[in-house]
Length: 69
Image 1 (cartoon, rainbow, N blue to C red):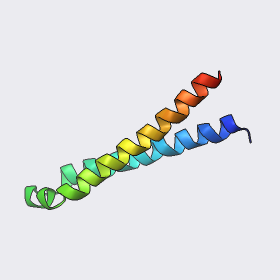
Image 2: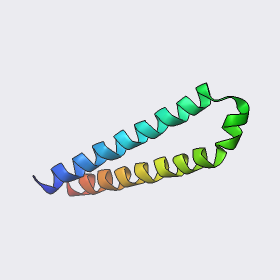
Image 3: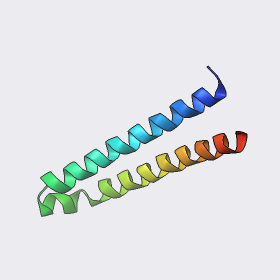
Image 4: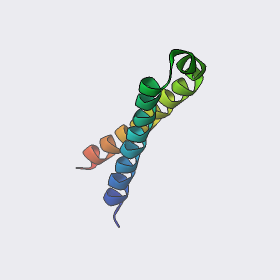
């Protein structure tokens, strides 16, 4: 497996993680009542930060691949 393959697998994993986080956030928004959503605010913010980190990692890998091309 080449470094490029490893980077592509990492990007794919990061994207899958973000998709999972978004699914959870959508579920919270659609299924929780207003009081539950309020209680889950900290969890939602944590998930948003985590999604941002994962997108940042994927972006770094894409930039590295683009620079190597």
